[in-house]
Image (cartoon, rainbow over all chains, first blue to last red; front, side, top):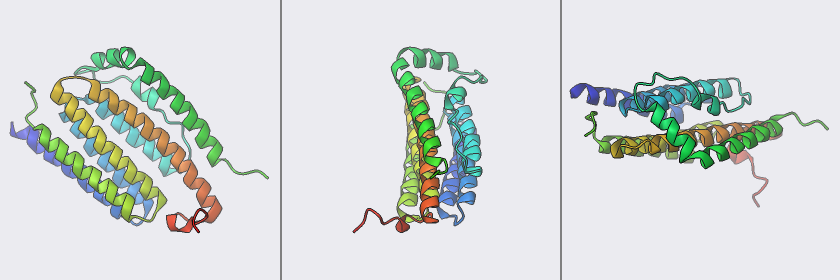
Amino acid sequence: LASDQLLFFAFAAISVLGSLAVISQKNPIYSVLALIGAFFGLSGLYVLLQAPFVAIVQIMLALLLVAELGWALMRTPGISDAIGAESAGVSNVGELGRVLFTDYMFAFEVTSILIIAAMVGAVILARKQTE
Amino acid sequence: MSPSHVPLEYYLMLSGLLFTIGAAGVFLRRNLITLLLSVEIMLNAANLAFVAFGRQFGTVDGQIITFFVMTVAAAEAAVGLALIIGLFRHRESLNPEAFTALKW
């Protein structure tokens, strides 16, 4: 009984302190690192909420953020890969996939168009202007 | 009904707190990259509320909405960062106060 609440407060403290550090750091690089810490706290909370798959995707997002902001390079958002990734499968991942590919099929397909548009937009916006 | 003993209210309060921190970052900071990260914090606060409600009502819909929010957040970060790089090349500054071309 108590251990759940203890874990909740520990993860909540990590995410809140990380978020506070994000907005209080002068150097944006430190802000990015603090945000990654906050993401790990949040993914712990997702595990507590019996959503382990969301927690794994959250950690992947944190690593994506390292790749994206750490080098200040445009990387393709790899979220569709993350959704297809293997997971521990201790809870309702199968149900999650079934609902995602039936009830939310249209939204899922629209998401792929969004990712293509964002990818093309990012590449075009960030390339060097050639006169 | 649910095996976890942390009540929904705790998650909602935490979500509100994180959202407030993110909003404060957007309004207080004068750095485009930090602004983008603050928006990211706000999106994650909303995600937390979605998953907490989904757990409370025993459906996976909250988690699925979270995936869509994460996808949109990744797209937003990619395009936003590209815009920031373009702006930096243009003005050599990350301070939003430096971009006054639409101001008169």
